[in-house]
Length: 406
Image 1 (cartoon, rainbow, N blue to C red):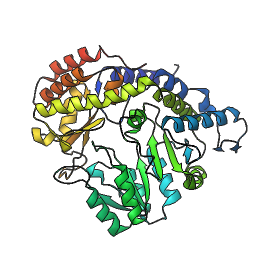
Image 2 (image 1 turned 135 degrees about the vertical axis):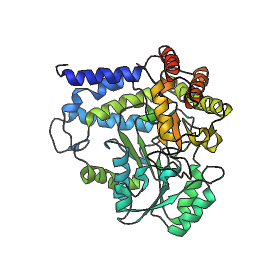
Image 3 (image 1 turned 90 degrees about the vertical axis):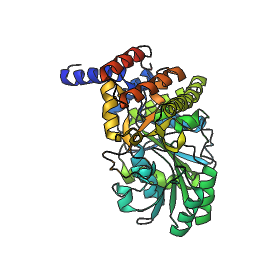
Image 4 (image 1 turned 180 degrees about the horizontal axis):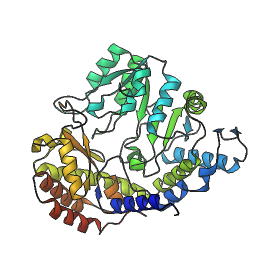
């Protein structure tokens, strides 16, 4: 590379990723094939519009690419082209959710989503997001005792508030969602149901997490996280909503799609259709349970008592430190997590009471339950004041045995 400053930054970041235990639940290591597609000549092409209806010439292969990507997505999740429309052009998850609302929810109407501090996402109508400024958020939470979704309470809120759309999905909720109950609640109030499966799409593809397609009107997913693709998004919608959503994406909110992202998404979807990926998805959850169980044995409090998915919420106040402090301590040892609010948190999101852990990346690198128990021990020792240098040495020795996914 001629630009030596950028080349140096790339090399430094590559070295950093290679040398740490990455427990960020929303990150993963993509394959070299996905990266090759992402950096391909498709990045050069403008292709406003949709297949066979572009505003620029020279889109023969873009059309073929977009059609192929849609077909792979439908096949991966076992849904029919007759019943479902699909849009693979959204740049990322938040713009994709915005497009769904823009298409289907009247301006100023109510969107009902999981409260941010309880594990929801900014784009589910939170007040600091544009989705909470253009629409009204009606928030639901989790039960204070069990720290899990209380569907009777969600029903009560929905019947009182009459939202136009209910969002089922999370960014920091460790349990399986009952989509059938959400469907029943939506039907009882006349609401549409959007499932944001960004975090667990790879688990659905691997058939270790329930599929939402039987119950949802719209399903949105990012393509990174557990799906192990590029940073992009896909919107699936019942046919009756697809035309409105397509118009909301383009020309409503976006210009030309990023064809290189679409190409990389196609590669990731193909990889996710293999038997090896199903084994990977199974192992993600085994690893999360092993990590959670070992942390509990060591005296850390896990929100909701455990996990059914790829992520774990740890209450670091049980160790006498904040989530921000815990994140900083662990980063100095080479263990990367993110600070995170826990349900009914009394602390600020800037320095909350917990940390969020996830197993997608370490599973991609080949780690299994024995390594999770080692990582749990290292986390416990670090948070209880052990030498950062000594722990970092163990981290280095462990990570060298498991090179990045190729």
